[in-house]
Image (cartoon, rainbow, N blue to C red; front, side, top):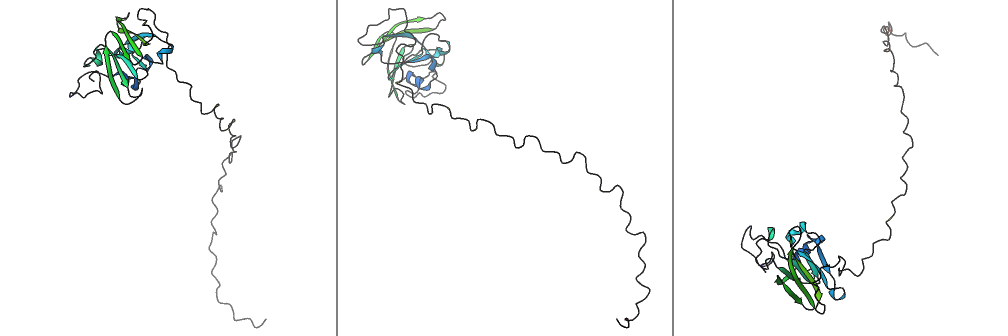
Length: 234
């Protein structure tokens, strides 16, 4: 598949300039706000819309750059800018199939500029290639089941919510209500007022004046002589 990268390998550096097929672009999610997934067309179709080149994504208004239905991905492989060197399905509506709708492997199915493409009971009509008021090219696309008539001749497009794929029901919420706060009221401060100051006035000096000298004069000598002999008696 030479219509995009991740096909066969090319021996080159900085060449060729091309991007990815519809299945890979869908998985990357780069164009989600201008991509659409349709449900079973049999119950709501035919569906009609504009398909623009994904290289013009930023300028597209009122159309899509990828259409997905089941495992089939549809995109306009426009040759310009980062997709200028695409080797196959150049300027065509390209159809790819993923292994399970969102699998790692995809297959290139077809590329058409006009006519109808069929896959099992699915029919895709490529009505006309045209240019909008801003100069962007697009294809008018009708998607229907084999038993439904084409609406290519009708001027109006399908409303945004027609045939939109929806899941059966959303998953249940983990909890009905958020858990309460750890405590409804903040805890009290350790003490309402600050503690008292130790002293309002500094303590006085130990003594206003130094203490006097221990003794002005040294003590006299011990005794002039030894004491007389023992006393004569009690």
